[in-house]
Length: 250
Length: 328
Image (cartoon, rainbow over all chains, first blue to last red; front, top):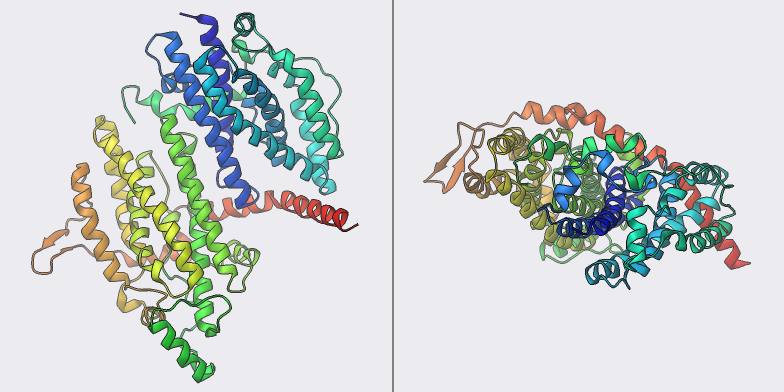
C-alpha cells in the first residue's frame, strides 16, 4: 500500500467532509433564505469532493474500505483534517472567516493538484478547483460586506479573524506523509502556498477595512490526529446510525 | 410542500363591495381559464386569499426545512447526506419563489415573515410533528411530498399566473423528492429487522397527519366553493384525500408496510379505498399551534431571523455605501 498517498488523500477528503458537515448545521437557520441556499451549495460541493477523495483513498489502501467506511467508521484520532475545518460555526462572521481561510488555501492547492502526475487526483482536483474558486469568492464577498457594513458587523469580523487565525499554521502544516508525496511531485508543499494566501487574504481584508492579526504561537496537530475538543462531538452525531447498525446498508 | 387553507382571516364573500361590472368581467375571464397577471384588476378578496394561500405555502416550505434538517447531520451515508441536503435546498428555493410570487400582489417578504413570526400567518400542520428516526426522512418524501403533489398538480392551472408558473417548477422537484423518499424506504425494506421497524414506526406516525394535510372535510371547508370558482383551488379537500389514499396504499404494500388503519378496505362498488375516521380534534389543535413540536419550529425560525438581523443590516449598509460611491 502507498501509505503516504493514502494519508495525503485522507487529509484532503477529511477537510472537505468535516467542513461540509459543519456547514450542514446552518441548514434552516441562516440569516436569509439566499444565504441558507448558498451555504447548502458549499456543503454539497464539499460532501461531493469528500466522497471522491475518500473513495480513492480507500482504493489506494486496498483494504476494501470505501468513502462511507472511512467517513463513518473511524475515530477522531484517525481523522486527518485540519483543525480549522472542525471549528464550530459560531456566528455568521466566524463561518465566513473560516471559509475565507479555507477556500483561499484550498483553491490554490487544488489548482496545483489539477496538474498532479497522479491522473486520478488531477481529475478530482480539476472538478474541485472550479467549486473552490466560487467558495473563495463567496467568502470574500461576505468578508467585504461585513467588514464594511455596520460597526457591529465590523467588530464581529475582527473578533472572528482573531478567533480563527491561530488555526492557520495547522492549515499549512506539511506532515511527513504529505512531505513524502510532495517529494515525489504528487502534491505541492503547503508551505509553498502560504505567501500567496497571506497576500490574497490581506488584499480582501484591506478592501473591507480589516487586517490579519499579528503572528501567534502555532497550534498544529490535525494532520496527525490531534484534534480540538470539537471533532469527537461532531463525529458522534455524524456517525451515530452506521455505528449503531454496522451491518446495515442505507 | 403545500399547506391547506388554514386561518380564515378574511371573508371571501365580500364581492358586493366591488364594482359589479369589473367583477363580472373578472369572473368571466377566470371561468374561461385565462391567467390573471399582477397588473390586472382583481377583487380585493381574491388578492387577500391568494396572499394568504401563497404565503402560507412559502412559510410551509421554510418551516419544513427544519424537521428534515434535524437528520441532515446524521444521514447514514455520504450519498444520502448529499441527496437530503439538495432536497432541503429545493424546499428553501420553493419558499423563495413563492415569496416572490406573493410579492407581486403587493405584500413584501418582510411583512409575510413578520406575520409568520408573530403567529398571524399559518404554515402546514404537518411540520409540527417530530422526526424521530431516519425512516421519517423517507416518510416525509413519500407521504408529505406525495400529498403535496396531489394538492399542487392542479395548482399548475391555478388562475393567478405567477403562482401557476412557480408551481410548474415546484411540482417537478416535488415529484423527484417523492421518489427519493420512496427510494430511501425501499433500501430500508431490503435491510435489517431494525431498519424495517424504523419504516413501520415512521408510517404509523406520519399516515394520519399526511391525510390531514388535505384540510378539513368538504362540509367544514366553507370557502372551497368560492376558491374553486376563482380557480385558486381546483379540487375539493376530500377528492384530493381520496386520490392520495388510492395511490398510496399499493405503494405501502410494495414496501411491506402496514397502513395503521383497521378500517382501510378496497370498496369494489366505489372503485376507491374506504378509510377510517380522521381525528379532526387533533388537526384543529395542531392548527391552533398545539402540535408536538410547534413551539420548537417557530422558535427556531424566530431565532434564525433575530440572530441574522445584524447580517442583513450589514449587507444593507454596505449596499447603501456602494451605491453612494457609484453615484459620487
